Image (cartoon, rainbow, N blue to C red; front, side, top):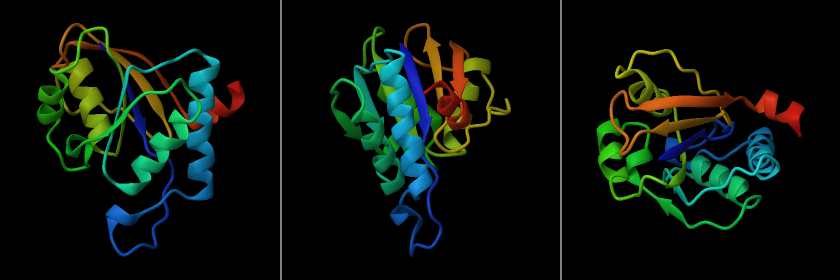
Length: 161
């Protein structure tokens, strides 16, 4: 299984609740660039999963506008306070040849990547806004069965476009 972890783009801070936070103009631009990068490098997805928080959905829509169509599924398994084991259990319903985009938040995204590639949650993976990482797993995602293939920041994407 190939998992593409994307942290949402930069979000504003002046909202009544965390759920309502929207992308800033820079966050929208960086998210669109992730989609352009995926299109340019022929990265495609068979599935796309997103947190129900507004900034994550805005990021996912910006990316998916630039790549071949795929259905976007909103899931509570990608909210910031979820347990990574819940996501791993949820991913059991997908096949080994799935290529899944997961748009989520910190610190969850770093915890999931760390757990997949090192069997521990303490590996210091840094996922700044609009950073995308590719992790391949041997079979169903679980502790220690993933390999980090690459991780690219918005600044590097900007240079590649």
